[in-house]
Length: 201
Image 1 (cartoon, rainbow, N blue to C red):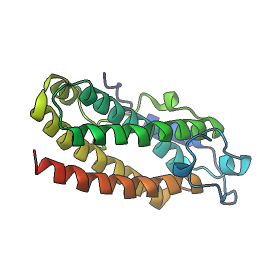
Image 2 (image 1 turned 30 degrees about the vertical axis):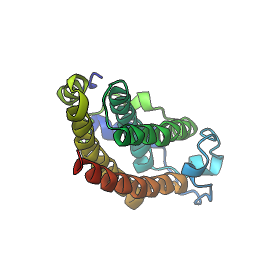
Image 3 (image 1 turned 180 degrees about the horizontal axis):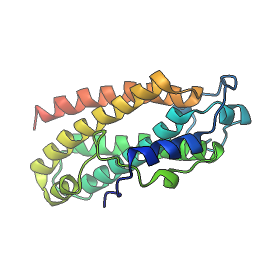
């Protein structure tokens, strides 16, 4: 995957403020987003009014972050000779993150923003892998590939947790904050699992 060109911080902030809109709407009591992945476009007008720039940044960046995690998982799953526990984890990551992407894309649409609107932002941090990292995973084989996947995904998950904690602290949309808290919980658990797997490979 080719990394996108970085934009200036000022441009990013301006884009966020423009996309997010303003509002002190009432907090919506929507359902837990992680429990109903099929309703990605079900945000109500109240939810739309209750999104701030932190919510827009969280959804936009987490879509890109999840997309790379799925690419990493697909790369591993295309290989032969991988420990079945690691392939099961890769499948688990895909199963969790694909519907979350759909949910967040639906939110951005309802909020009047799309993930492509902020595609120029610099997302080189947050646990994202570089092109060299992705190439190394592509070229690795067998146990080396399994170990590298786990090492990279641990770093990737830690970045996602930091992003989600930022949303939990600063976000305004109740569903987005709920998803952020869910990501913290689920990916913290997956990190523990991956560290245990690493110790056995």
